[in-house]
Image 1 (cartoon, rainbow over the protein chains, first blue to last red):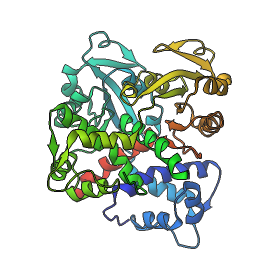
Image 2 (image 1 turned 90 degrees about the vertical axis):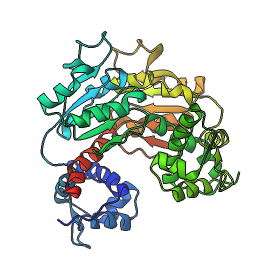
Image 3 (image 1 turned 90 degrees about the horizontal axis):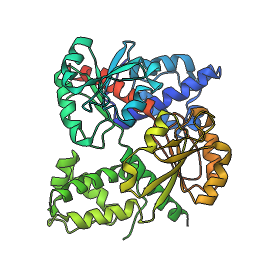
Length: 211
Length: 211
């Protein structure tokens, strides 16, 4: 399949398509038109067709899409079938919640260990995973062929931890620290404070728009 | 200040401006040009000026922006000075982590209680907040004038919980369930599975682009 340079906005919609198609498949739906899929996702039908055209298009227009085929194609774009191994930096509340995150399983990601510097948690276990000292970070990554580093630590260490993990061979970072991290490897950030501020913005301004 | 209809993309950059300006203020920086701010945030200078123009512009071009003034103006756009009260639906791992989330303080949000249906956690406390039974949800919202509902529960209950909370007077929903929720009140979603898939996409495809 020919794949053009795809914009970040399209990439961010792919998981949403994937999720909706999984639901449709579970409901037993075999075919869906771009209009029906668009209505379900609150997008314009032309947006859906444009998005799919970025990846060479997925079906014959007018006939709709085969749900199972479309799902397979989007899955192949999003991820390959290789398993991923991850570690979590920071065994605080967010780090612990991520060690229990059920969403990893579906996407083939397995969390192997957590890292911290707090002697009260180093040596304990979270959801069956060991909490190790950060001093052992690079050796652990190399010896266990870890490819995803999840940062659930203070913002001040996010950049440094990313650099250490990238140097040790990590292939991607999932960053929960409220700090923009810069790296040659992919970094996906979940900034809870930014998200909360967006909610407060809409709470303040949307009502005003309607008034 | 005149405020045009602002695109969601601009809104999502506002917290990032805010965060960077807070850091600059902490460093004692008094003035900054759009080019310097853009470089810091890895945006085009013209993007920064365009974004600020959505809100009527914030300074005299050529002189740069006064950091403190700009910070105050963006803060006023993002949120007002009113305090917010929140509840968390679901006292599982994510719900508990959110009850401890330190980012609420800065934005004036105070979490008052958690709700669950599991009799093993109802009646306990998380970070000093009571875990109550979901049966008491509407009464609690009305009696305590709660304005933010945080959903950290199973996807199957996300839509129903949003409707119950909105009917009881909640003004905004912060949704952590992996399900798109539809409501007349603002809903801000943090979909961890979608975010993880975006990371996997970049890990798979960015390397290929460079090859």
